[in-house]
Image (cartoon, rainbow, N blue to C red; front, side, top):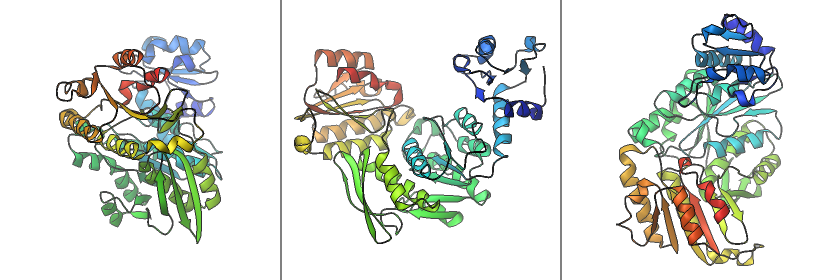
Length: 443
């Protein structure tokens, strides 16, 4: 059957939600058949119906006479249009988060802090793209008091497109670095892409949270409503910052000092905790609840995790990587003295260091120089063993004979099996495409 968008929205309101995966479709949901790069959801309409879908939105005209199938010209556009309509039914604050590094960590910390007082809808995992964001918005219901949405960008215009769906009232750009520079073409284009969020907020009288210690972001504050945060800001002033290996610091607020011991690896995560503190204070979260939330947050999905076993201590930070985050992770890793663990309650007291680094993706013409820069940085630290994974590193095999190079993760596993690591402090970092989490059982 064919229906108007308004009629489809009324059906959505009476449903139990949206699904775009026939395998996980639940009773009462609407299955929207999205055509992706590898699969066409229109081929799985019958599967979705068999799994309990109440309706299916598809472009398969041969299903026109099936009362359970709603025929549209563009299923993805229908998903976006439904999300836009749904967003307009809510007047709650919507906080959008983008940036080159730390989007997901910031989102998780902010949601954790706000959840101490509010019912918060926030992006699951890293569903921050043109599919994930509208699906998140469509989960809004009348019990939610605040939404925190993550926005990723692959090209100019992406953030503006996502803003038109989510219509954020508040926004945060974590950092601007050299992530995906191959896609954007230049660092200037990365800045332009990320600050599309500020452009939207300015146009709609929104509010931006800006790190006053960031020379790239602070110039944008003059044209937009801004709340500043930073290491020396009266509301987020910190001292005694340490990351050995977990980030810890003292937060000085209202003549009180709060010691915050996080589960985050690396002092480069400090800026993300300060953003969470700033946003928490703005939304009237008590300082005690802010401290409790940040202290209790434990990262997952290979993000700044520290894993202890009976062989090694592993710093697992392999969900994503770009030149900026790779450099920061390495600097922090080599700042940790090995004897730090001597008095800790760990099975292993590491005696050596190992770095396992996967190639950085989507760097385009910059890939050669950026990977060589990382190799030179590692060379300056002279670890006991350094293993590099992927063709972008492998091309330098002859230039750095002191290092180990493997073309892919499968060969990395073979190397580790034949050359096991014991009593090492190990840093594992690389772009998601390397799937470096597969190495964990062998470490």
